[in-house]
Image (cartoon, rainbow, N blue to C red; front, side, top):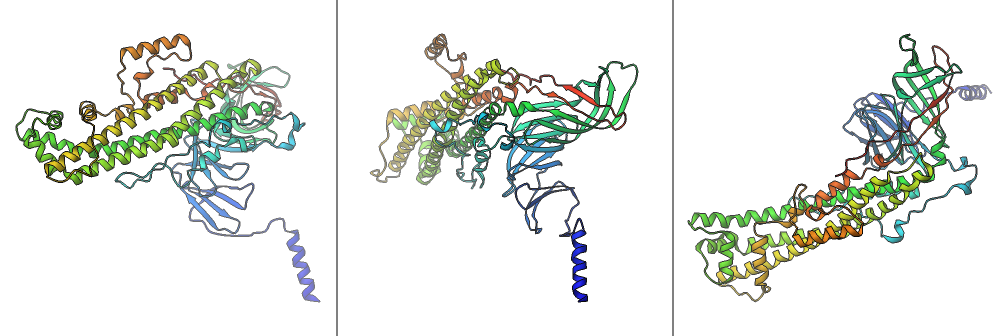
Length: 585
C-alpha cells in the first residue's frame, strides 16, 4: 500500500514538473545556436568554430559540415529539406538536409546576417481559394527535362568531371512549380532586411535606417540611426512582418535639438503585397531561378569542354613540337608544314621528318594522340548535345516568358521587370544560340580533319617502316592540305573558347548581317566576331533579373513601443528601391 502511494506521488510530481531533462550529451565545441526541423526529428546546431551538426532526437549524429565561413544565423526551410545559413560576410548558404551538400549560395547583404526566417504561404489563409491562380510552367510542354551538370571523366588525370554525386539536387531544389510560395527573410547588421522567394530569388529589401517615422499625431518625423536587426518574423499569410532592432530614435525635423533614444524597437510592418501579388512573384521567381540553374549548366559545360580539348591539344603539340626541334638540329631552313607537304606530294622525305615519324613519334605515339583527340571530340559532342545546347535553348524560351511578364509594370506599377533590359538579355541569348550552333559545327569539322590527318600520318609511318598498310583507312589528300594550312599551328576550337578572342569574319558575311538588322530582331551586327565564351560572358553581365526587377513597395503600419519614451509609431512609408541597371555592352 505504501509503495503504491509512493508511486502515485512520484507520478503526480512528474506530471506537475513543467520541464524534464531528456538527454544530456557532450559536444566537442561550444554550441552558439540551434534550430529544430519543422517537419522531422532533427536538430541543427552551429558551434563556435562554425561547424554545422545535424542530430536526431536520440542524439544520433547524421553529418557534420564546415562551410569555411563564420556562421551568424540559421533557419530551416518550411518543408524541412533545406538548412539556410547566414554568414558574417553577407552570404546565405543553402544546404541539403540529406547529406549537408551545398545547394546554392546567394549574396544578400554586405555585412553579417544576424537573423533568418523562412515563411511559407498557408493555403488556409486564403479567403477564397478559387481566387488564387496557380501558375503552370509551360516549358515542359515544349522541352524535355532540363539538363544537369555534365559528368565526364578526364583524359589522363582521372578527373571525374564537375558534377558531384548529388547532381540532381539543384534542379529538384529550384523546381518551383512543385513548391508552395515561400519567402526567406534575412536581417543584416546594418539594418537591412532582404526578401528572397524560394530562398534564391531576391524580390525586395528594406533599410530601416532610411525610413521616415511619423510618431503619433504630432506629425514629427523620426529616423532610426545605427540600427541593427535582431529578429525578423514573417507571418504564415505573408501579410505581416515583425522586426526587433536596436538603434537610436532621432528627431529629423530638429537636428539642432538633440533628441535621441537608444534601445530595442519592435516594428510591425504591412507586407500584404507579397500575399496580393504572390502569383506574379511566383511566376517571375520560377523562371528566373530555373534560368540561373541553366546558366550554371552552360558555364560548367563550357569549362569542361575547354578542359577536355586543352588536354588533347597539349598531348598533340607536345609530340609534334619535336619535329621543329629536329629540323633545327639538322640545320634545315624549313617548317613542319613544308616538311609534311613535301611528304604528301612525294617530293622528298628529309632526314628530320624520317627520324620524327619512324623514331620520335612512331606508330604507338601516333595512336595515343589519335585516341586522345577522338575521345575529346566524342566527349565534346556529348556535352554539346546533352547539356550545352538544350540548356541554351531552354534559357531562350524562359527568357521569352520573362519578356512577356515584363509588361506587368503597365498593369501593376509597383512590381515588374525592366522591359528594355529584358529585351537586351533576350537578344544576347539569341546570339548565344547561334554561337553554340557554330561551335558545334566547328568542333565536328576540326575533329574530322584531325582523324583524316592521323590516318595519313599512320600510313606514312607504316610505309617508312616497310609495314603493310591494308588496315589503315584511306585519307583525303585535299583535307590533309587544309589541316596543314589551318590546323597544324592554329586551334579554332580554342579560339572559340577564349574570352577575349576576336573571330575573323569575311566582308560578305558582315554585310549580310548588317542587312538583317533592317528586318529587326537584333541590333548587334558584330556578334559573329565574338567567341562562344565572350558571348556567354555578355549574357551573364546582362542577365541579372534582380537588377531588372522593380522592388516591391511596402506600406508599413506598425504600432511600436520604444522602451525609453514609450511612443507609439503609427505609420512607416517605404520608398521604391530599384537596383542599379546592369551594364549593357
